[in-house]
Length: 263
Image (cartoon, rainbow, N blue to C red):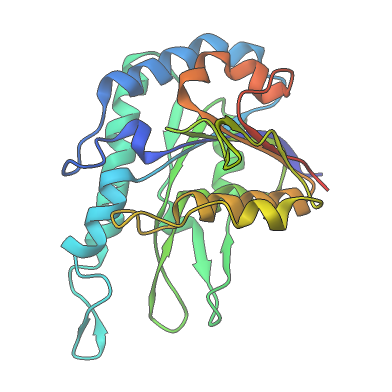
């Protein structure tokens, strides 16, 4: 029987200073920890927290030349990408522990592998053990070396769909700095629902990544949320300003953003 869980993804624009150099927004992380600590006893199933890389994930690939080759081999600096991402998780963990939140950081590159076609899988045994011990697992996007020795960037947005292979994911929340997917016919409103009936139309409305975002922006979120829907998991992309209503969002009793209906 697959273990049930919720998944909460926090965008890097929320937790990091995206235009800075490897800078966390400590006051925001403290607020996140306080909300989670105060709500933890009320969840009916455990929660997995996924952190966007923000300035960390966007700077490290260039700083450490992960796509360059040295004598036919990947750059000697390449491991610093995953070191950087785990350093981010470690610093976030320090803030959470200071606020009495039971978290446990896990290095995503150690959990994931890729076959020769680039198809990713995740070994979730460590996550299940951490959750059974009463901790919230912390994951982030990371670097994965494929079977062909080529480095692959794993976006944090892709992690929820990977988790559905082994977990009964009840609901996924993607917190961002925008309210959802905006309706071009009325830019002051957002599209309430995405389903199989309107998905192709809505897909044409979402943008790709910005120049500083290497892992897809809203378009990649859209594709991942559609994948979740096809696997029977409902998700919502919503603004972080509603994070204090986390319980209602997890239960689906109150809607703030664009909901991707399960199929």
